[in-house]
Image: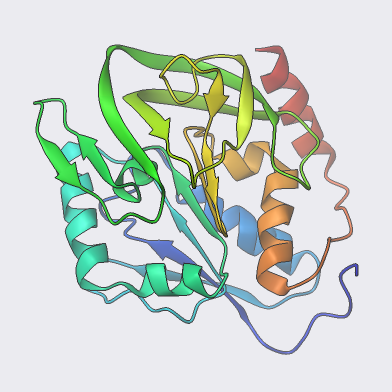
Length: 241
């Protein structure tokens, strides 16, 4: 089923903890989602969920960005105290987790000081610091059904993420590092939750991924494409980088 006439209801996009999980401008992913909905005639709003707010389980989709070690601890404690994100994912709401958010959503991550910190176990992954930091353009081939175009983003992390049996990779690396453990894989997919080390913001650089998340949130198989030549130019330029 393709997208039909937009309903009167508002699509609500949760921007989770932008006050601590927004180091690399990943809040732009929520803006991309809202704009792509509005360009198709949907009413859409961004719901910012800060450290002073409980996480609602009733939103249509959620995004989380990157952060440093201390901010990750704050995020982990908050999401443990207010498990609305976990509850939303259990009912199938799509969630996009960027960089350090993968680590927070995993079983545990090790800090740069060597301390192991428990995550919230939405992903069957663990993360440990690597000897060298991965910085630069990242290009991958998607492994997720429904995605065909190469994925592109900017990685900046020292974490090495190992996938467990219940987690699947988002993509295979063409250039760059990806998950950082030498297996040639990038990102993680588990249920309705997608994680990637790509900044950019990733959805500005990968409209197919943005529309994949939106289709899941709207309960449709696919969305009609948008004619945005400037986005195509950005993708061509970044894929050549």
